[in-house]
Image (cartoon, rainbow, N blue to C red; front, top):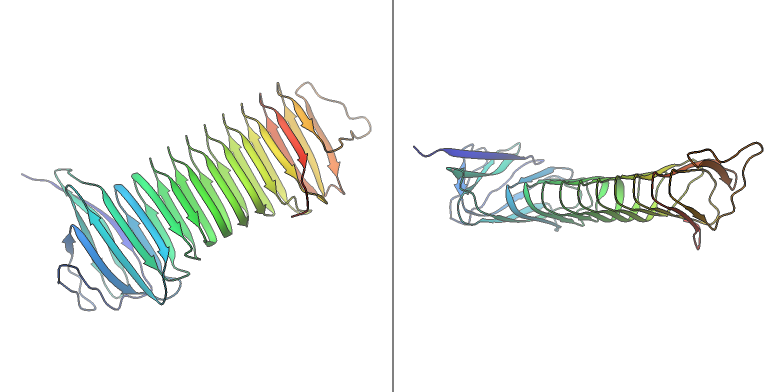
Length: 309
């Protein structure tokens, strides 16, 4: 007896007005029957602010910005398995189905209107989302994640791959376990986490930025706002901070066996001495912001930046 395994991923849209199939089979509005195909070409119309969710087991997901109000999906599944797609007036579902657990790689390309929320998930594959100008949620286990041109909120996660977020006006949460995390040209709060990779935050304009890694290095180049809070730490890696000119912050530095190198003048407060754990605090400007830099066995470097952010 052949067993059928199905993975259904919701594709929730503002509304669905039309569906066209490459095999020539179409759905009228309101149909609720499933179509199971190994190749899918379809176009649906959505309202601004709708949600597009895409899920595969292995392969690649690529999402780009289109024009108008149409979502266009082109997907192929190789070497076993089929797509399952269901569309109704209120939404649709896209997933993959395999007989006897035989499932090949999928390649999914989607074009969406600006402002649509994207939720993309894979187990073993890369995810790329470009210039959609909306919320992005992208999660994979063993692939890389790259997000550019998003807005409002970005959640990008991988277990064993790298995570990159660039050119976004959004709050960013970027996480990996064994990969590197990089955020560049970001306007919004940033949180970066990894275990054995590096974290690089460059050209960040934020009131709150945090980065934490166990064995990797941390680099930060961005704002240190007077009402902001910034926390950067590594257990065994180095931490390098570029402090913009005109920054106002109380800086707390702590390391156990690492070295501190700063070209920013450090003035200890009256009665303050270096503790056995080598922890000290000093003010830059009026000291209104909060900057915390920690590394247990790595070096800490603080450099004066070339200009204010």
